[in-house]
Length: 85
Image (cartoon, rainbow, N blue to C red; front, side, top):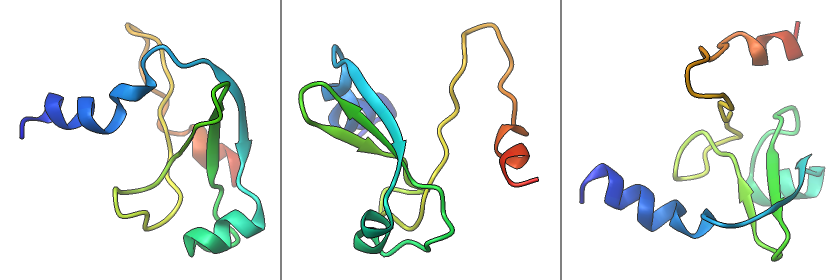
């Protein structure tokens, strides 16, 4: 499977969805994912009741980070580091 086919299969259903909220995971949710309590798990919730959890890999081996940007603007790799400084 090529890269775009993979992205389409895994994330294509996000097209057209509306974000309702973005929040940190609760301790219970971290426990359910078997992630460490000190991790910052991010949940993106949509108006249709679905959600997206950012993970470091497709196996769910810990909380992940999403890079948000605008085309033509460089990504700031230090953004997360400032959170824990």
